[in-house]
Length: 92
Image (tube, rainbow, N blue to C red; front, top):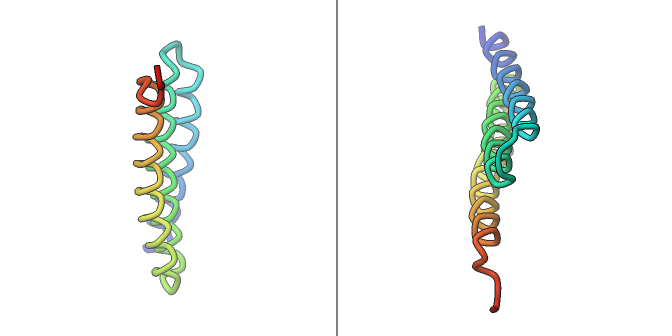
């Protein structure tokens, strides 16, 4: 049962990766595309890590660190992109 749940998490993660990539061919703004890509990438990567956690539970400290790092990194990257795109970094 755990093995099946692990494969489901891995499959959902790969699905989110591809779904985020498909948002890049949309006809919306670049920031909307980046937002969709980063959210789908984060969810997909976290789902894959949860699947790996179910598959190899002895590595839980490392995999938990990976999930926390993903959450912090992608959140901060989103704020930096939003700040730079709003013109906050201009010295005019």
